[in-house]
Each structure stands twice: as structure tokens, then as C-alpha cells.
Length: 549
Image (cartoon, rainbow, N blue to C red):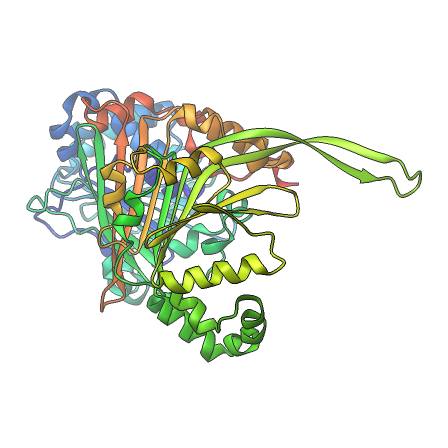
């Protein structure tokens, strides 16, 4: 079942919809505050920019990937969209309205030539128009209704069969929407900021809080409890997109809701690019970086009383106060992942009834990674390590590096190098950290930290996803595992950068989607790889009965 959350799929697939602002006013007052996402595109700009892509049915794929289900007559109408008197000056808006029993998908557009519009519609649907309360309408299927009046077309659809009366009632409600219930009045920042001057091709607004209840988010919470468990109320993202040969660039704003603003001071201005550049992984499959303010975090711990409570234990274990311990680090934290693989281990247990030892072969994920942190005070770090070696910690010095074994006898390598400290479980990575001439991360990855408080990078290629261990998904999420590993996409990689918080409580947000084919226009690549019924849209649907157990 296609849900409102399919707006997220639009983002994962790279936002292949185009938009441009028109010369006439747009019917944005019809968009209710209930919506959790809003996408917009301008069909004429789409057709002009990539005519061959348009001819292959891009308009259909836009609607399908945004949640519409198109019957054969509806597909015929969409194929004739450019001939149907639709205004080229108005953006086309697509959004969904969540309800108690069902979600309504809405496509809204302007009409320049109503006679031409009605003619194409009647020819495609093989039906005639009706009128009620000055609104023209036509049932397109048992779940879909087209309505139009005052030069505005509103196409409504539900996932399950619905009466034309119910959909018409919703269309009438939208047209009589009070100002205080219109998104254009209550949150004008959600509306697309598109113009030919800034060369923006697309726009997408998403209410971040509305994404947390989709099945994929529920699964991810097991592995990324932070930040998914934060209170996202009032937080939203507004992105403008530009499609180029071999890439898609998205630039916009992330608005920090009031609950999130409590964490605003925890970030400094950027992640240290030198720390990123020092990682001994030339091409990571995943990378993350944080630029944290140690002073603000410590101050928060002091104000909460937690610092005072644990300070005696910290001092006994490290010989330092909490403040001295925090002062060791600069606040820069980066993680680079080189490989992920599955390893078999034998785990034992005792049968409580028979006393027999039970052995089981368990497949676990093994990560070849390196964690790096910036050092503010190297002499204090040396004192800390010397203190830990003398204590009963298992830390041992081995020349220029240290080793530490955990309870499961896993070996960790700790490597101090100047103003940076590294942690890894892989001997090869440890050796590369110690070798001055060992390969280091490419400049394009290191540069992501510049003026960014959060950096994320992921290789999206099938050969990488296919190696993800099943243990990451669990036995009850086989459907999600198969989709994540098997989905074919045109993407090679995705990078995300979040800049410092400005005075208006927004941060500039930058996303870059690298396409596999660097010589092909991104729109063509997207259309060539879209498979509507076996795509990321499936991941965002409600889980199967087996997966939900």
C-alpha cells in the first residue's frame, strides 16, 4: 500500500521531478497544514530540458513513485498531459493528506484551456464530466477522482477503492480551506522557492517528525537509536534540486524544531578536514563526521548535575577530573568503514535441565573500520594512557600503539598520531595508520568536513549492499534485507553535509547524489532504472505480516 511516507522514496531516488516558478499566482492556499511532504515540478521545463526522457514516460514514473496508482485510462491521460491545456506557468504540486482511515494522494495543477482539458480527459477516460457546487469532476477509477474549477485542477486518489462522493467532498474542503489551515499561511517556508534565475529544477519539503513512524524508520531505530529517537517536532527540510550529467545536487534548509534547539550549542563550526584526510581508507564504503563543542557538552553535564555525580569515579579511574578529561579532546569525531563482512563464531550455553553444553554457530557482522578523534591536549592524553596501563584495564603499550582486549577477547588497536587518536580492530588499518606513506582518503571525501557540523557519506552500489550481513536486518526483516541488497539503482554514492545553525534556527543542508554513469544525464539514468513495483517504494510500505511479528 502506498503511504504518505512515499515522499521519502522520492528523496532516496534522487528527486527526479522538475519545477520552475510561474508568472501567475499558484494555488498554494489549497494545500492543508495536515500534509507531511510537498513536492513540485513544472512539466514544460521537464519536457524542454530532457525531451527524450519525457517521451519515455517520465511523467507517469513521477506520479507512480510519489504514491499514485495509475489505471490504463489514467496512464493514457498522463501521456497526453502536455496536450491537455495544462498551464506551463504553474508548478504542479504533489502531496498526501493523512486521514484516520486512509491517505489521500493529491496532484494539483493549473489549467489554461479548460475545453482542451475536458476533451483530452474524456477521450482518455471514456467518460463525461459532472458538476456539483460549481466544481467539475470525473471518476477516473474506483479510487481516483479528477476535479477542476477556477483554473485549478485537483486530482485525488486513495490506495483502496473509495467513493467519488468522498473524494469530491475532500476537494470541496480544500477549495474552501480557511487561511489558518493553509500551509501557505502557517508555514510559507514549505513552499517551493523555484526560479529560472537560481536554475533550480525541483523542490521538496518534508516534515521530519512525520517520517519517524514509517516501517523503515522503526527498523533503523534498532541500529541508529540516536538520532531517530530524538523529538523532531517542528523540524523540517526544504530542498531545491539541480540535475546535471552524472549527478544530482540538492541544496536547502534544515529547520531545527524547538526540542532540537537544545542540542544547537553542542556543535562547533566544522569537522576538522585534517582528521578526515588522515583516515587510511582511500575509498570508504561509509563515512561519518561530527564537529562537537566539548565546552558546551561539559557545561550541560555540569548543569544537569551528572558531572558532579560521576566525577569521583572518573578521577579514581583516570587520575583526572571530568573537566580535565574533556579538555583532552577537540570535539572532532570521524568514522570510516572500509569493509563489512560476515564471520562465523561458535557460542556456547549450558542446558539448565541436563547440564549439557550447547554449541551454536552464529553469523555476525565484522566491520573493518577506523574511528578517529581530534586531540586538544596531547600531554594530558599521554598521562591518561599511562594511568590506564597501570590500572586493571587490559591496556598495553606496543611501541607506537596500544592494544586492548574486551571480554570476548577481541583485540582493539589504539594509535595516537600527533593531534589525532585512532581506534580500529583491524591490524592492516593499524599498520597503515603507522605508515606515513600509506594511502589516505581521497580529497573529495576529506573536503566534505569544511564548514560542516555533520558529514555523512555512503557507497550505494549493489556490490557493496550485497555484502551487508544478514545480522544487520534480523530474522524478521527478510523482506527489507532482500530489497536493500537487491534493488537496482543508478546511484553510486550519496554525501550529506549539514552546516552550522544560523540565527533563524536553520542550517544549510547539502546532498550530492553521484550517478554510476557519469556521461549520462541524471534524469535519463533515473528513468532507465525505475522499477515501480520492485523499488525503494516497497521498503517504505507497511511490513508484511511475517516482518511485523
